[in-house]
Length: 142
Ligand code: DQA
Image (cartoon, rainbow, N blue to C red; front, side, top):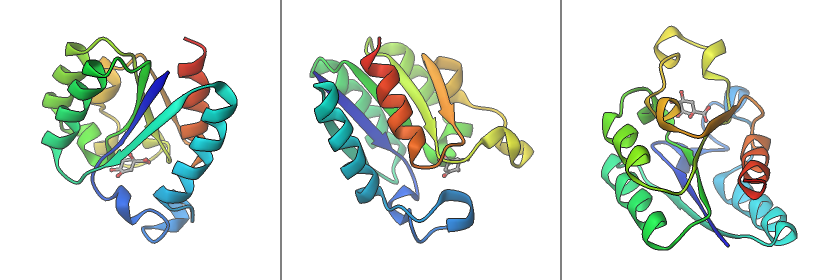
């Protein structure tokens, strides 16, 4: 059982980028934690990151083509702007869980709207790197 974990713009800089907001774990650290937990849950992880919107759209299509059990999606700032991601999430059958390290609702007003959240199965936000692990548990239980 395969779970795609898709990460959008600037998340390649995790660990260095505003650590007071996003924590000190890198995306590789998070991938390692997810892989450990996935093994326990009998799942396999396909971890990706891109700074380009179209890659995320293509990977959502790929997740469907590969028969993924679900997708964890941290779309970064594209969360708040991307109608293309909204449409792509609605277009595919695997459930998509919106993930954020920070809690966008407790931050600037421009982060309060989420195109991803409007199409996602559910959202986990505000628990730092642990948000990803909680989202994986959610997919495992679907
Ligand atoms: C984020 C929250 C977004 O508002 C922001 O643009 C990011 C990271 C998070 O994981 O907390 O890039 O998705």
